[in-house]
Length: 188
Image 1 (tube, helix red, strand yellow):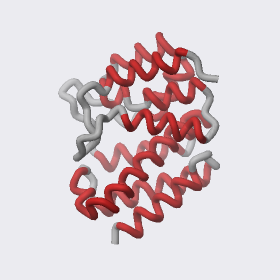
Image 2 (cartoon, one colour):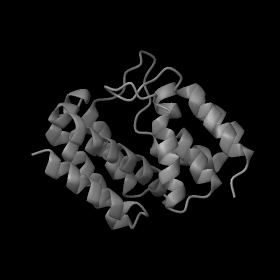
Image 3 (cartoon, one colour):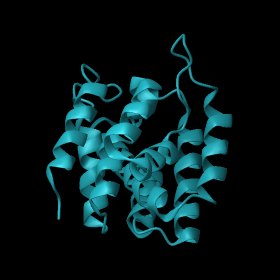
Image 4 (tube, one colour):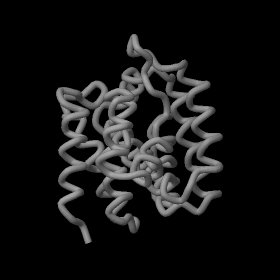
């Protein structure tokens, strides 16, 4: 069962993403963590996993200070899941490491990641892949102009993710594979 802690996690996520929008859209960014938490719950998440899903981008997008706040407010397990889903924290000037090495490191990390991280990360990647498919249906290939990666790199990354989640038996693996296949088909 969910308790008031889930509302506290949502409130912190709203704070961390205040004023942010999804790339190239008018959609408030908080819709993404909410969608990730929904997918995680649909795939068997407990409350701590759902809280981590809500907070999975807080450190990446809001800065390192959120890591300490998450650990003190929600405990080690939630903080560890968030850390395991974080793919690059901006430096003092707001820059992250280069895209390709960062993604290669994240893929390598997922091969060893905990079941908790696999569930939340898989939910995150599934939500992102579904958003890309939706945008491909509505705006076409121009969706790839929003990203720092090329169309080929984006497809490589999502296909690599699908491979790893399948190999690891992640709960979202089947849905992610189907969504990535649709993404590939719509991208030609």
